Length: 394
Image: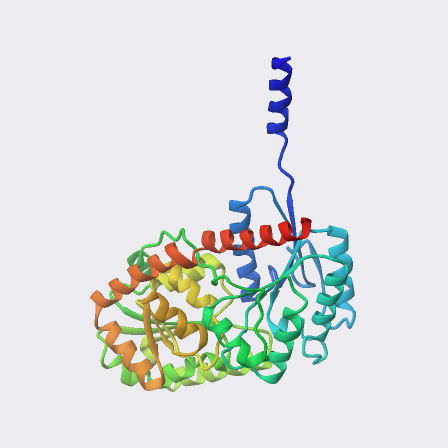
């Protein structure tokens, strides 16, 4: 009898744990979008920790690697098709990555997404949403969307504490279902700066880097215009702009503007303007080849480029706005500047101070290890999932 009990106990122990099923609604690969790459990294991190995680990705019609590439913003009923897919998946949790443009149909101010959230709530699917654009001062439309959506969610995720602190004054009530989960950074980057410089032909150069989507709000043009003045104060300086094009008129026009500014620049021999889409691996190598990352952005909530900069240990000089300034001041991995003049002066001072750059690099690595690494993000997210599932079953 004791032998039989041992056999039955062993069989129970060998029985695989029940899978946690997640329906992930987001932009996804190969769609050229920061949140697509973000979602790939996020899901990998979750699966690395939770082996019994099953993720079904519902995404846009050009996201061919998604499980269900069905969202078309030319389709007025896309939200209904998403609900049908969720019902078919029958997940334990629905997790949505939110950026306004991802769900903006016929200028409806994300109303179809609100309808989707209501239908998911009515169908009793626990739902979490990560908000990628939360500002200290919300527009009336943003405030209305966040207020309405939080009332339909089990949990909302913001990236920075200041976003939550400023929220009640924007929406006139204080939500209790918002969690802070930082934008993730890769913890396993093993790149050497000098080797990366050699790979791109920057040996012996002091590299100031610009990187990101081709958009006027990035402010790259401001650095290019002032480059003659900046470069005279840095020995062997080179400005490298790694710009990712988008199939929009605004992106095309901005690329033309940058090209013109480089062509007429008196220091154009020390400017490299690269217009291309890039793989995540090549982008990380490029960031590592920079001595500093300059981010003179005019507007931003938080930045995937900065998160990658932390991962490569590249000190950053950023405009002190929203998540950019917040994370630099939290990490100590760069300089947060209030205006163009402080940005330009910060670039010059940091490029001429290798010891300070080395200290900032160590602080960037510590910030990733202790706070914003993907393993930390995944652990916090799984904790949120499990808490919601426990509340649902009780």
